[in-house]
Length: 288
Image (cartoon, rainbow, N blue to C red):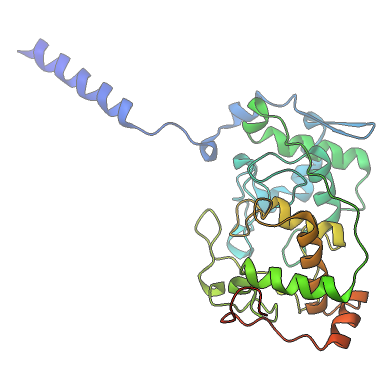
C-alpha cells in the first residue's frame, strides 16, 4: 500500500508540473540574459556590443526599464506611458512591416530621438558607439533576436508635390479608413473610440492629438508620418494600413493631417485657403 501511494503521489506531481505554463518571455532569468551577452548591432560602420553597454544601461535606462529589461524599473509606478518591455521584442517605431522586428538603425534612431509625450528623452549626447552598444543591449533582452531577423524596411516612394486636390483626397482617406474614430474629426484625440483604447497589455493608451503641437513619437517629417501609416505602431491599437491604402493615398493623408497640425506648413496654409470642413462621419462614402 505505501508503495502504491508513493507511485500515485509521483504521478500527481508529474501531472502538476506538466500543467504549469511554460515560462514566458516576461519570466526570463539573469542566466537567460547572460547567455545572449554576445548580441551585436550594426549601424553603418559602427558595431555595437551588448557586453560594453552594461554601465550606460545602468546609468541611463535601468530606472525605467528595469535590470531584466521588462519595464519594471523602480520608476514604473510613476511613469505614464509605461516603459517598454524589451523582453517581448515588440516596438512601435520601426521601418519594417507590422509584426516584424525593427532594424538596428530603427532602435538607434529611437534612442537618439526620444519619444515625445513620454519619459523617454533624447539621448543625443551619447556617442554613436554608446548608442550602438545600447541597441545591442536592448536586443539581448529578447529571445526573438535569437530566432528571427529584422524585417526588411518598407519602400517609401518619393514625396509628391502638395496640391489642393491631394489635401481634399487625404480628407476622404481620413474618413474612409475611419481615422476619426480615435483621433476625432479635428484630430484632437477625442473620437468615439478614444476613451476605450488599450495597448496589447491591456493598459489605457491615448490616441495622438494632431493639434497640440507635440511631435509624433516616431518622427515628425512627412516620410516619418507616411511610415507610421504603412508599418503601424506594434503593441498599440494603431494598425498598419499597408493593405488598405495605396502609396499615393498615404501621401494624400499625410498632407491632410498637416492641415490639422499647429505647426506651419505649406499644406496647412493651403488647407486654410480651401476653407476645409471637418470630415462628416455620417456622409456617404466619397461625399465628404
